[in-house]
Amino acid sequence: MVKVTMIARVTDGLPLAEGLDDGRDVKDAEMYKQQVKALFKNLASGHNDASRMSVETGPYVFHYIIEGRICYLTMCDRSYPKKLAFQYLEDLKNEFERVNGAQIETAARPYAFIKFDTFIQKTKKLYQDTRTQRNIAKLNDELYEVHQIMTRNVQEVLGVGEKLDQVSQMSSRLTSESRIYADKARDLNRQMALCLEAIWLYIVEVSYY
Image (cartoon, rainbow, N blue to C red; front, side, top):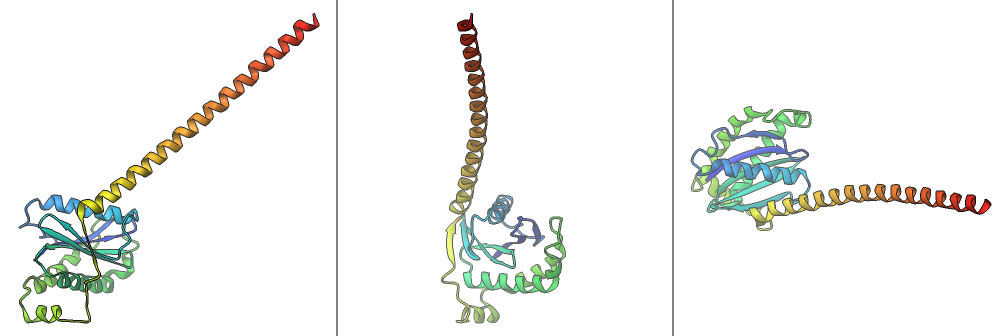
């Protein structure tokens, strides 16, 4: 079943909409939502460039698609068909672009399109039961394939981002420290030059007398 749905802008990770009653029947729902936000942060940092991916986390799987710099993500049970999950996201994407497309780039506050929850809930109900004739037809649709969409583990995905952040921070720190040492070295060289000049003048003066 579809458990959580969130939509965010990839350029800065700003959450734009989500299902308001999502996660009520999910144990540790807040932890999973924090993972989603961390994933959005990674996407905003450019750590993952796949436009479609499935990310396993505990008994669930995050499925997401990125289009027009917007990420549409849902969390489903592992047993839920991957094909239906991505078709669900496609339906959300098409409607979200149609209704809010012109305002997406200018949105400045989180959940600026929270009213989109109405469409999320209506669409989610259509996809909950995988045995309906409608969903069986979608599963049998040979024109829509998901076999090539990569599946990864959440620790692997978020860990890569954290390691890259650590490397970036270490690089920045080393650059800053090297600048400090370079400044100190220049000051020391200047002081040594002044000392040598003073010694030379002293020697010249003593030799003169």
